[in-house]
Image: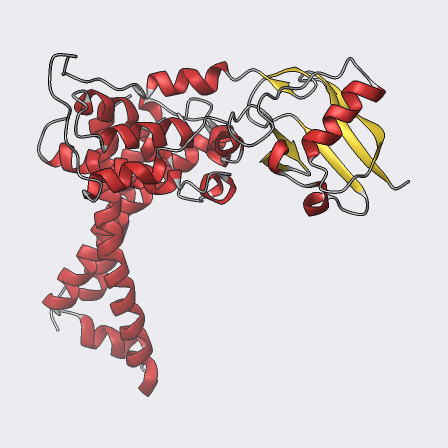
Length: 115
Length: 237
């Protein structure tokens, strides 16, 4: 058993969970407050484009999700499908990269560019 | 005379439930029922017990789907409509009828380095550990385990990952982790970390719910995770 690797993964999942807890709360509160006045998609983008704070916040959100989800999925794949070993970890690294790339692409789409 | 309908597992991994009718008695335990069957109805029934008073941990079985000490389980508390179902302890190979092979259960205690490793000899003075020391108290909370296997049979993770060390072995490792006299701490942490060790636990607390000694292996496993995290951050693992 690789105690060190598993411990570091456990720490990473707990730390990312703490970040996600905060991010989800801020995200939900932002959505609820933002739509109070009945904003259109164009009006939302008008407010978010070029917002550096929003970009950093959601990039952090995406990074935390990209770390957290594959580690949880790792246990599920092992227990439910019996898939363990290097092939599972390679697949999950690819999954983590996909989450990060797709998530950051969405963040850039909403927060990137000029205001 | 009031009768209890008892369905009892017969066979090994492959087998079937056999029904018996057993006279009801005041304060009758499930072990009393099994003993009545073996002594009066079918002497070929295989089961295991020793002390009959909740000290030895050898009579654990599955009663109405729940792992229990049969000697400390009153029929009144578990019978449904005048009937009970008695099966061998779960997650362990069945040797015959109600007897399981507990080798893997105890082998995992060994894998978790569940033995004390001291450095003192008979010529040294006693180690002095104050009863109120936090680590002593943490060890106290888990030290009364008698190895009955109820927690192991109640842990879903054991069925999902047969290599998983299980709550009892990890609880034992935790009590040793809290023992200031033990000199094998790091090796033990290495043994209990990993996806077949404490990190596999989902804290569903089936073990804690069912432990007849009211021990919380879940708390011990959480303690091992914290100890491993500290060791990993220090670069000691």
